[in-house]
Length: 120
Length: 297
Image 1: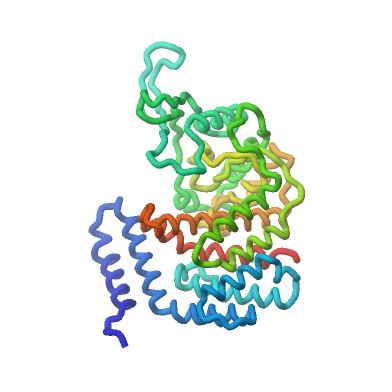
Image 2 (image 1 turned 180 degrees about the vertical axis):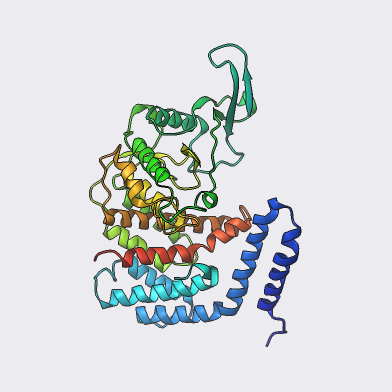
């Protein structure tokens, strides 16, 4: 186990300090940049906590669709991307629908890290 | 700049804007002289743009190419323009944006703009090929973008029209005030293409800022925008066309987001803003999946 506070906890407290203490004291022209920094810290914190689970889910979903047993997400993504491009999922059948559902689940997991505010 | 002229037909004081080439200009951009010719052409066609006044590529004048145009009042910020609107948005502005885009789309290829690359055989398929070439150069594959590109390939329109496009016609690239639309800006991506591409880009969800429910650029209803458009154009968008070109628009923006992330990651231009733009990808991917899911098989 890593030392507490861990990376996520450190990012959260640093971000809160930035927004509560520094932002009100900064001149208005630095407001937008400061909010961008706070956003980058929030994404990093969420990825630290949930990135591993999202990646495991992604490999499982990709392998389920392709019928392969890839170990890394890079290989699994590449295989499926090629299959989509060559038209293997063109037919409007259950296989296509399963892939559409899996792509949506993976995308929602990524969105919950990058920008959960816009989750449907 | 504030300008005072003594004598001649323009005697008096004026407010002008000088646009010049940045030290590192982007590949896709027109030169300032070409931009001036485009502005002249669209101004003559009745499109609301800042009146172009003068251009020069003589580097002895200010060290760079430049163009001069009238300064136009108004707000460009997408966040401000989409704020404090009622449920139907600003129907006057939406109509003006539609009618101005239609006036632009009445311009067909002619010798005065011969520096613009000729229309490609199928603009949609050409774009799909370009995006795939870019994706093939990345370390990471993107199955959702491949899903979108394949759908756009299979459903590519077999009819095509050619007219002058703005190619970045969206909220954020025009000036408006309480009197409505004042001027369309940022013409450096102009080229020949299918008019439906501009409509898809303008109405795509990624350009609606604070009002994703208002399909006309976050400022108005789609029906008001299309009513304005139909005043000057016989091009009719079906709902299927709209969905197709909105998907193409979202794919284009997703590719741009990846390009911006790459510029940051390669060290060419280290920037927090470019890095964060790369992280917009899941939002764009979800929109691509939703658009395709809602399409008829």
